[in-house]
Image 1 (tube, rainbow over the protein chains, first blue to last red):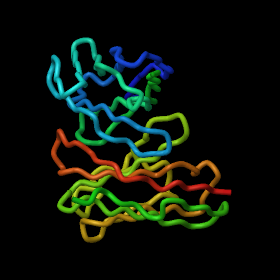
Image 2: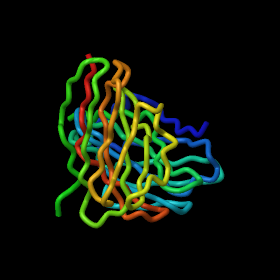
Image 3: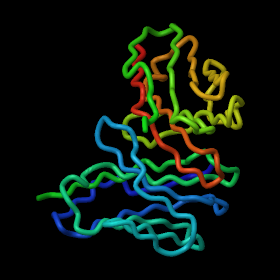
Image 4: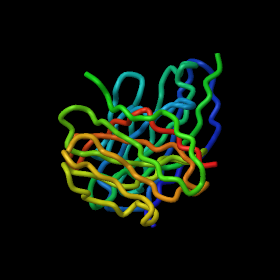
Length: 111
Length: 114
């Protein structure tokens, strides 16, 4: 059973702080890794993707991938109240493109 | 350009009825995916189309669920003899069909089976 694990939270941070979201996955053959943001009652919105070990930065967001540890994380710098949402980690299995999602981590940024 | 669209946005039906959910992908995207999401859970994969054919239907829970994409664009997810446990948000996503494909989600259809 291929699994993606996330701490459900809630993770609470003050405005302007760094939020750190973590994810582990069980399938060592996973190739692609994605972070989606989902506001309540809305569909998932792609934030970032990462394919190679290391860090990938996009504005206030940094994705980090460590395939040896089967670990992927998302850092949100200068957190804003508008960042309050559920963050879903997703990976593709060895076969290709079907995404396997974690349950999501709820982030709350207080002003 | 236009994103993924899904209709209806909400569907309420009675146990045992048949329902059809429609997905219109981003123009030019050859890959189309169906997922369903229950409250407090991440989306769960159902089926993946590459063009007109179902490349992976391993996520369909049973033979009451069926999906088609006859012309390689719009897809319909069909659920026969609905059960209360089928209640969920059904999400459609599309992508370019690459192995490292990013998937873009539609707004979803909220299905409620009474």
